[in-house]
Image (cartoon, rainbow, N blue to C red):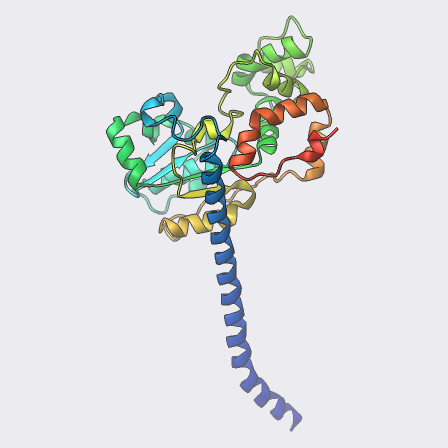
Length: 319
């Protein structure tokens, strides 16, 4: 008898619970979507307010598209088929976004972006770059296409660049930068000609050596793109971006962006293993860098911090 009553109770309550649970999930999902949308609007408002002042690489209004060289516009990928412009920034998930764009314009809709190697993704000749179009077409596309970029904490991005190009053997970066950095800041001479021999001898650029190179007034700017300031790659005070993603919130931002572009069901964005360096880890990395050099470094990247709303790392800058 008790079992029958229990069965009838479950039969009655079960559907109600299911409906309540479904609405709860919907409300939570809707709330999350609205929060992401609010965050996106705040990012864009902050950027516009900063650009309208004297913050940025130039006061707003003193430069125009005509004033910019083709080289300055070399990081903008154009997708005419979908009306998209993406400004890629090295060390900010740009490999995965390039893979995504390659698959997006393939005839095979089932091609997995992860099947494309990072080496292949970085061959820029296969992309339509904005600077390859006549200036009149550039203007037209910038006015009508959906434009987006992704950014990350500038000091964390420098750690990522160092780990990728100097902590691991990289022949190109060793010959182009590593040997000179070791000579100038590592007190090394008669250096091996190859990165393999250098690492075998225990010779490699330290993180402090890398920072010394960046803050040295003799170092030519603009920097190499992997550590060039983000605003110098994407010019957010000249180009009005429709979407600003943060690597720190990559998954949520990307879901919103793909929905905005009507691409959320077409191709799955490659999964990313983002190194979200903690405050403790950040302090540990920069503990080898003297306070004066940390402050000089912040000055170099201050515009990125301010334009994109990243917290000033006062724990690294206060004496």
